[in-house]
Length: 292
Image (cartoon, rainbow, N blue to C red; front, side, top):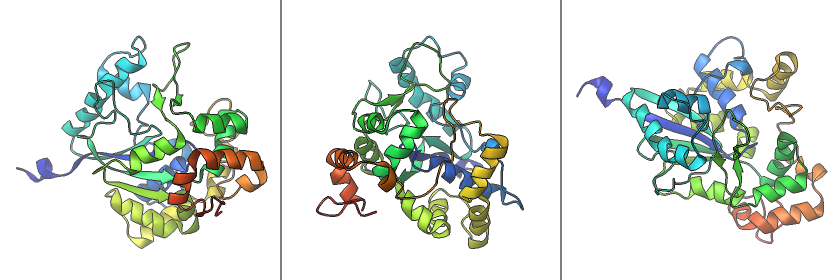
């Protein structure tokens, strides 16, 4: 077997529930790989398509998926990701989807093609605030969606969307689908820890993803990926990944903003829905009180 044939190949997933820091994490990766004297443009984040991108899937299929149902598309998707094994090397792809199965019981994102994942986890109290602004809905509506076991994005046939259906499940189910699936080689990275010590946490994630992780290079990537820099770029250039009905993509980039935004009743609803998992990951204490 040649060295090329023996080299690792497959997909590392950059996974998260929406509004949990995935785009910032991708900016860090792009700046790490570029290792240049200036920040990479936020409109040039070309390191891997999102798992649900219709253009990527149509390109692999060789025909348009517009006339297929969501279930029909899902049945094809594992084979499309498996196709990536034909090409040498490692790729990294973003996903907001839960780790789910097709109607045939096959892992949607293809276990055979998956080398592992980094799962970005964020306090659901902050997720609710950020997601409401992103989805242009009320906070109560965002909390409803976060608690819905059948929640999905792009789940409509009324018009063609750039993404195929993305099954989210509830926030708790989404987290567990990635973190509790055996032998998935999944590194769990809390957004709050990444904020608190970006260099150390990102170096740990980069090593897990088979990316460069030497301290000097990581430090440059962190400097070029500061939230102030991302907000400046969006302000001056716009951001092509921002939904058309959202005012801003990079809103605050901090932890604990829920304290100024959520009512006590909304906090109680989120803890009632997700308290067990929040306690497990350090967001509430043993008495169910928020830790942050």
